[in-house]
Amino acid sequence: MIQSAPKERVLIFDTTLRDGEQAPGASMNAQEKLDIAHALERLRVDIIEAGFPVISKGDFNSVKLVAEHIKNSIVCGLARCIKKDIDAAAEALTSAKQARIHVFLATSKIHMEHKFKKTEDEIFQIAVDHVKYARQKCENIEFSPEDASRSDKKFLYRIIEAVIKAGATTVNIPDTVGYSMPAEYGQLIADIKNNVPNIDKAVISVHCHDDLGLSVANSLAAILNGARQAECTINGIGERAGNASMEEIVMALRTRSDFYGCDTNINPKEFFRTSRLVSKYTGFAVAPNKAIVGQNAFRHEAGIHQDGMLKNRSTYEIMQPKDVGFTLTGLVLGKHSGRHAFNDRLKSLGITLKPIQLDKAFERFKKVADKKKQVFDEDLVAIVEDEVKVFHEAWSFVRLESKSGTNIKPNVHVVLKSKNKSYEKEMTGDGPIDACYKAIDAITKMKGQLLDYSIQSVTQGKDALGEVTVKVKIQEKVVIAQGTSTDILEASAKAYLNAVNKVIAQALQKK
Image (cartoon, rainbow, N blue to C red; front, side, top):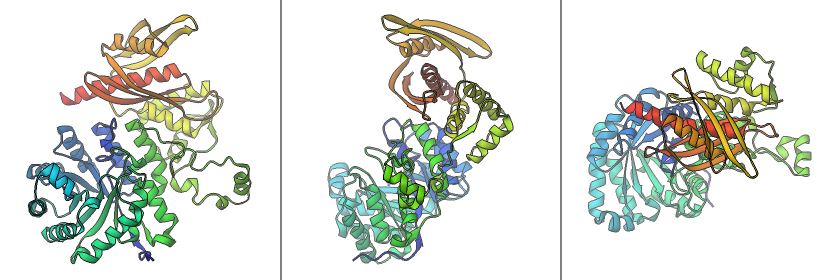
């Protein structure tokens, strides 16, 4: 029987900004990445993998920006076992208060034979040489034998021992393609501990993918067998089926510390807020039944559950909503509420705005309060997210008028403003949204191609705010943007216009 480890700290290595961004369509700009990095720092994440600096100028600048602003978490840059990669990572991390370079090289036979066409001895030497080179640039070095779970164990032991001797302070054992089973993966970690003589000189890390839905289970099995760093992402985003979900790993360790004997330094009350931010910037909606941060995670509908909950919450809840940041309550404000009450409520939700931002958000709140009988915390969060932009707003929405119906060709009249001057256009289309987007294209002279469109209600009720998320291709750039309103057409217009503004802002940044 596997014995639980003594109570120890597990380091949390977040790769939302690197592996998470590799999910198709999840691209973020530098400011959005910095916002998420600040959120991860509030979570008290130990290591933030900010990107892959050599891949592009944008990635390099994003890592550099995060390194300049994050002070409490270690900032990490990824690099292949190639000197130019390591040089780029080191340069991007120059201003980091705490830096780490993460180098990786595939060690499975299928990768060595088909990707590299190299022998074990050649791969071994490349790994050792580049860990030594990286150590000259940075004291904190992590090495990953890519596809470790499908690598020959004896070769894995050999290369891990060698890279630790060469200067690696963390060795990561990736289940790169989500192939392992929990018992199998846990045993791999135990075998590494028992067969690598100098393993006590490095932290064992795990990085699991969710191709078979086992990434969190595999990560926890590894921790049970001695791994002391878990690599994960917010909401479990990542390439293919995604990565292990940070919130699930952390809360499993905390809720069942009696079983795992481990905990983390994470502040879980920031989970819900951070989850929303990542969802907003990537355009990936969080499933209602998603563990920990899904909207239904703490809702109970069955009569027997509700009866038990009324008597004692612990009958059907193993953690409380407030533990992971669900501070959302019932009716909090109305149309007669003042600016001070509005600001106080935002602060209680963990939102602090600059005076100009507060003015814009309060003005929008009053408009929403005039339309809605009840204004909920969820509405306040959505209002702030919609009004406080992380990009230059070249065009602002003024109003629209629409005529549509059965056997009526949709007609939409849109009014926008730029540099204090109003512009308007009336267009027809296959539907009101198509007509609206054609009008915005005509005014802004920015032809967009709508790639994806989704809508969800922010709260319940017929007068709920609707949140529209769009993915739009403009000038060969694909961007994701959101808009909210009690009027779905208006929310759709704002989302599309925000996408236009994002592309303009990106173009201005390059000049």
